[in-house]
Amino acid sequence: MKRLHFAILAALFFVPLTSHALTLGEGLMLVVENGRDVTIARSDEDGARASVSLAQSPRLPWVELYGRETWLRYQPEAKFGNSVVATSQDQFVSYGLKATQILYDFNKTSSSIDAAKYGLAAREIETSQAVKLAALEFVIAYLDLLESEKLLRVAIDEVTLYEAHKKDAESRFKAGVVTRNELLQADVTLSDSQQRRLTAENLRSLRASKINSLLLKPLNDIVKAEEVKSGPIAGMTLDEAWASAEATSPRLKEIEALIAAKEENVRTAQAEYLPTIYVSGGYDYLANKYMVHQDNWSVIAGVNINLFSGGASSSRVSLAKAGLRSLKLGREKLLDGVRLEVKSADLNLRSSAQKMEVTKTAIVSAEENLRLQRLRYREGVGTSTEVLDAVTLLTTAEVNSWKSLYGFKRAEAALLNAAGKDLVGLYEK
Image 1 (cartoon, one colour):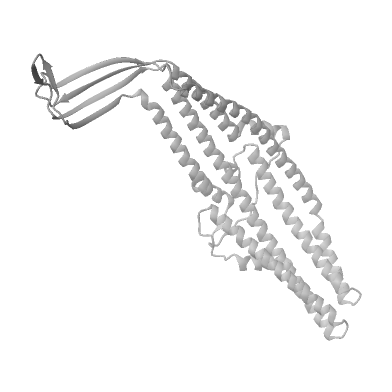
Image 2 (cartoon, rainbow, N blue to C red; image 1 turned 45 degrees about the horizontal axis):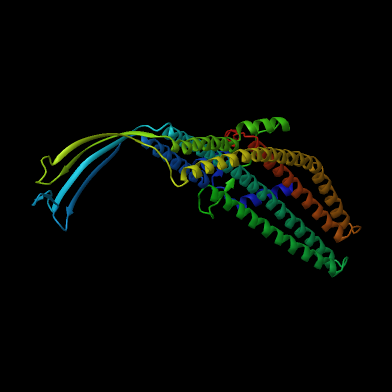
């Protein structure tokens, strides 16, 4: 009962009651909506969306409006027998409007558009991956904070127990029952415990700052985390987790979209060898009093054929094909990486569950051992070292218990994330 009172007092001391308790679900919603990494990914997605518009631009007319004034050193003249006739002014103004529309380029533009769309799809998948990673990072950070608060309470309880033992040692020393050595031993042990408490306080403060950083809040803001009363259950076999991961992995979807985009890039590069059919029209005005018609309309239909580009076209085709091969090989490597991540998370979860089983009875045994050792010491049949060792054993059991509990919760979140589950939807309930 005393240990419970100490834990409550510690919680009140380090986390004011006036602060709002942040739930895991609330924090997750804030992080996936406004987190830095998610915002960056969405900005990249906007850039990819602009690339689609850029790829579609050849389907629209290219319109050019120009105006210029010309000064000539010599006035243009022509000979007609022995006569010299001026053909233009030596200073004149000209302006005009020209529009060009590609009629057909053998799907070069279509391939570019498709490649840009696949690139946009890859960016959208990358954004979803950023959301998943941000959610996992926050869940881990939140559980780390809860764990650090429990470890801080354990450290405070340990200091309290050592202080109580010191009082017992002082009473026995004043009564002349024990030597000064036992009192000095109690002092040193208490001092060491107080340093561990300070370390636990610093760890809690650092992890609270991590939460504030993820929430885009000042690092020194007070954070009060509400305990996760019920979380998702990862109950699935390894094969089920693998199948889920392969079906939903944003990284696999992203590389598949990139492969499709690169295939379109290959077609785009190959289309450079094919003709481009276009039509162009415009209006030109030339301020020249020697011309019969100073303005004119024109329509031009033409074909451009790339006969030789210094090897640039073939190089672009080879470059695109090499990139495509690299992406396909990368997909196989990524698939193995996804499976390894799932297996690692699954093994970690199983190991954490076993650790929880091991620590279930350790605390009860350690508390009973401490009670007996303190009783024996007060009755003069036990030693100070036995009491100090009993406190250490109890502290170790409590630390292991909390670490195994939150280690299990972290492993569960990691497995759910690796299997492609939506952490936001699972933890906001």
